[in-house]
Image 1 (cartoon, rainbow, N blue to C red):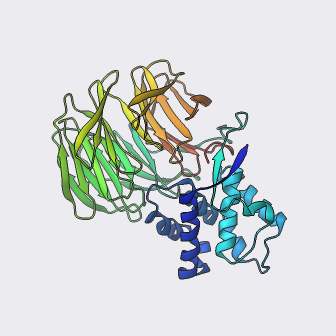
Image 2: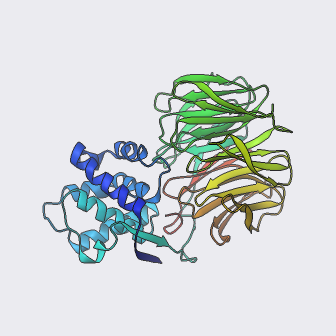
Image 3: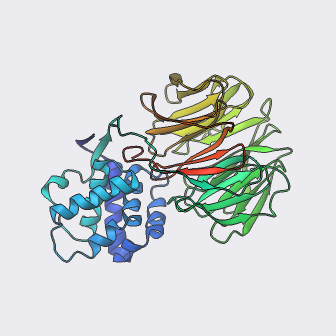
Length: 431
């Protein structure tokens, strides 16, 4: 069920205006180049709001190309509804968001749209999930087989065309998630176990880190190793990017957090030492604060002032972290999963369901869907706002060790036996 608000959303309206200007400047060829559209929207909107994701997805699914081929000035109602339905069924967009994307592309191409859709232009679209439809797996999984040891990390690129996995077998592998085919193996970079892998938000670089104490930066298109950032003694488990793809953060057993400028390879800051080593780091979606998970605590650092702003207790030394919208931080520890409001400095709610520790966690960029993986051999998909469990994936004799969200709301999972999966989710599960 979708409610369309009458109040204008400045961000959505800004994204719409930017699209219109981009088409006017670069021409209708954009309608057939989803990667270029993603780049053009990533620069002014590095946090990837739902509106920019929806416009990008509309190109990838051929909606913009169909509108470009239209000779009439008015988009027929049946065509408008068919294109909207395509985005809902193929990409997992909510109906209101899908209609907004079709309307924006129509306007950018000089078409007028049916009256029913004009109120969606620049509107604040609020999604409410139909719980009977939300988050159900669609069909059988695509199995990603090739790692010889356990998978430690997973990450999708900005348009969902690639998923990267890291492993204890000292390799990073790139896959086509929708076919299960391996694209390439990134070898010769790490001399020990690889603990983490992350695509930059703009998709131009891939970072990996592991037990040899260094961070490697790769060109995901060619597989070429670009740089080696050496700043730690001992393993590195924490790895994340700033929303604008400018800074990559590494954190390790030596208790230090290093902030690197990707373009110049300069170390911008070195925080620490923190007691007991560091398990994970997470960047705020607006780039204002950094969450640092250490032994029995998580510290929130104000990056403008370069100082600790908050500290909260966690259970154990291996807390996992994911940042969400509205200054929310999502945490998994020995007790389970829960949410913390950084803005208010308080506990928000728990996600009850796992029997035992939560070892991996992922948040969809739109902030509506949360994934948790536990030592109980399950992965659980949650409605983030009300902690409603949408679906539980259960596995025999294998632990879920890595989780990632596809931009369209689908799911990537890695396991302790070295295998990984890509699962498509039915509509209503993400956007």
